[in-house]
Image (cartoon, rainbow, N blue to C red; front, side, top):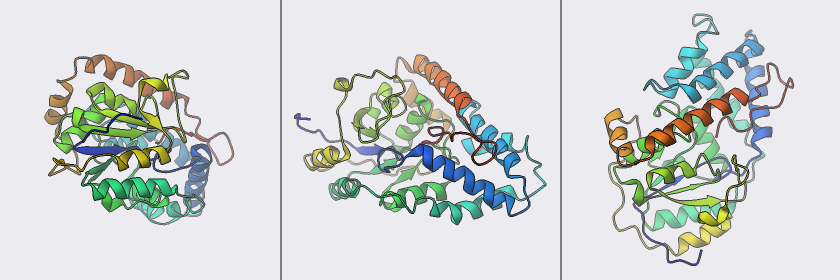
Length: 306
């Protein structure tokens, strides 16, 4: 980290393990238990609901038909829970607006996160939250609040309703580059996962790997090949960034046209190969995720939703 930092036109951040310090295994277990209880007290079979949730989440991780993750989730969910048995979307909205918010009450924000974001904003850098897009917007906003970050500081949040695939698919990152309207080479990706977050580098983005809650699915990644450090290191590093002279403008916060994402992918010679590898990774991860059928029935899926 001795090199002179360059200017970027936008900064993208992962959330869980990057901005948000959290034991994902413990959080996901609490999440499942809260959902189970929420449904059970309303006369709904909590175990059946969690199984349908699992199936819907698997569909988000593996579909490749151009639909949004939200559409993929509900399409599969309704194959396992009667669509007419309840107003499922209203129920989940109620859950995410209420009980979900309490799940992060014990989270201790890292003050270096707020420091880094404040400096970047002062220097005029547009911020984008490129978190795993499997949650609705309110759940993402809650998790940013737990991290001590203002959701309104981000020009775009990736959520299940504005994304058509998941990490580490190149298409996911192509959608975000297209939403920013800038070349990947002008974007910095900040994350903690050597596969899911560094996949943006396949398209040409620069990267900073945050190591406080490092995740290495490869179990052998060479850290010397990428800029890395703790969140405190990152906060110090951004102090040396020059002001953003040419920030991304008119950033699209919603869904991105397929043709725009394809145009970004076309600039990457290895996009097809990377896409195939990402599909295998996402499918294997979804298949391996151990969701409990009932609270306490098994370990939570600690990394299915990032």
